[in-house]
Image 1 (spheres, rainbow over the protein chains, first blue to last red):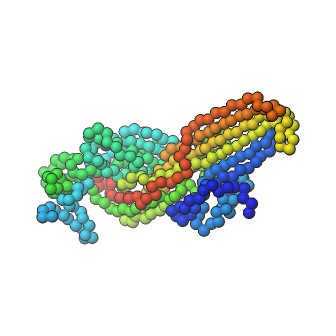
Image 2: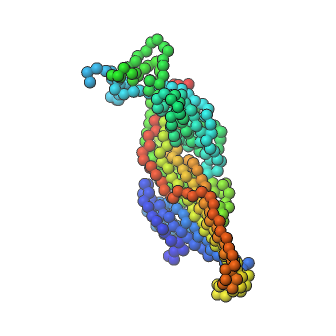
Image 3: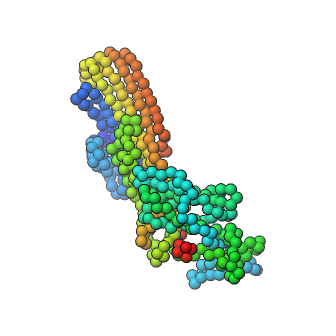
Amino acid sequence: MIKPFKILETRPEKEGGTGVIFEVFKSQVSENRTTGGRLMRTYISVPEGKDIDQYVFDFLEQGGWV
Amino acid sequence: MSYGFIAYNDNNDVLVSSDTRNLHFLGKYTNPTSTITSFDTHGGLRHWKYTVAASVTPVVFMYMPTTDYYGVVRTTRNGTSNFDIEVIRSGTSGTTPDLYVFADPRASTATDQYGMIVYQNDGTPAFDSRLSPLAITGGTSVTHPSNPKGSISSSLDCRNCNSSNSASGSVFAPDQYNTYTIASQPSKPMFFFASLAQSERQVFHQCSEEECDGFDVYGACIGSGRYYYWESTYWCFYRGGISWNDGTLRAGWIANQFGCNWYYRKESDLLGIGTGGGSGAGGSWPYSNQTLNLQNNAVIVGDASRYD
């Protein structure tokens, strides 16, 4: 998987899952002669047994980031 | 010890002892003295202060009339004969909890002529049957989930904290809880719960934009152009609470504070030569993504109707 996000920190959670702080960047080019990008840094709780990269990817996909 | 009094129940638990002070009913408070703060977004918050008359440290039980989350967040002395009790509740209704306040018998004076008093060895009362001793009907230990919310969604505005409180409120409204069952409780239970757990969640949004009035050559602007940069960090701070719904106890979260911090910068140039710019910042800084005090938190239950 090509990861469009960067995991900055992970921490174990009491219930067995993993707390993940990550950031994601998305570049944007619009027709009115502007270019730019958006970056988000946030926290997500990944349940025990789930693949962290896939879980974060799915979350970002739902939000339209990837 | 050679002298004193001790009474046990069938389970060999101590009911009354001359070595410890029992709690006795001091008063019922149905109206807060003041509202400290409130908001309707982020799951809602009502933060009240009750001033109760007590000469010794009171122990407060709440009757929770709704299925929202409640917690006692602070008890402080107010002068020589009062204490201030701060209670928070999630949700947006105006319904207030009733507080049932207990203290050791030194805080009260009985007027009945008959009853039983047990004294400690210093001559002060440890138990007085005339003062409505606290009767406990149940209890448990709760912990709060690690997260108020499983994930913080990505729909907020990166520019100058432009997203409304309503928009950030829907992002941060807590929805995680742990469930406990306490069987055979009275129809009007009252709960002792001192909120310990705290949590903070935040989402950082950054965006930039470059406007080019000249020619765009391989991504570089030839001519005049402007560069904009924005940052916004939305955050929410939570306290642990409990809710009661027909025999089911939940340990969940109450949004206690929220805010946003922003930063903005603008640069202009002409043929690569800077022609001006500006920047700004504002808002309040958050804590960082943390959850604290996820300890076992005692919940004690009594029958409020005994003291009405």
